[in-house]
Length: 222
Image (cartoon, rainbow, N blue to C red; front, side):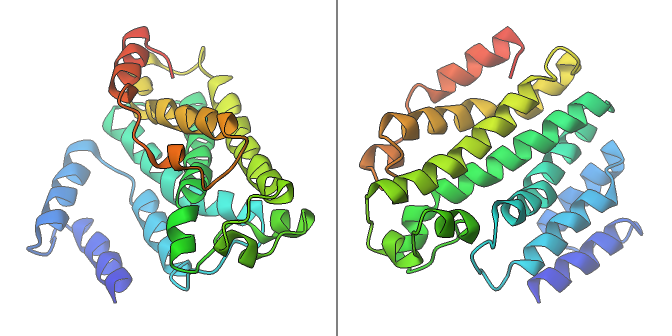
């Protein structure tokens, strides 16, 4: 019902008749002010609707598709708000969104495990002979860490691809991509603990993260 509400709400927003609901009204103002593309908003809703059953991803491509239609779509909208229409920026946004989706899936694994749920791609788990029960029991064997290594490596690869466009991406697009700082921070931390997804240090806040964001912003890079 929530998804149907938002589908109808987005339709109404683009017909200039938003419901009298605070979030819907602000979204309508943003759409009017920045001429936001309806397709990206609908992709987010449609993809979330498809995942309401909360099943594990069958493969890494399914996880990437989910990230593309949700995280990357948000970045495309952010670029529109910044007034950026650039193919290289779109390519970078696609890869950063996928990296964000993969890292979010990794970071949430201990939380989901505490509720007896595992969403990590099944193809990579099967490749290393790891079952969902291994994650529920917080197994720290090498094959479990190999699963995490493979998934984290894919996120790192997407960050690398996104940064390969850096010289071609307009500088005014960079604020949309500052989340790469937090993504890289997590990927470095998980490497330092030898890909033990349940290591307590991964659940601790990095108090220097705001400073890192400021420095990256000052350098005008992502």
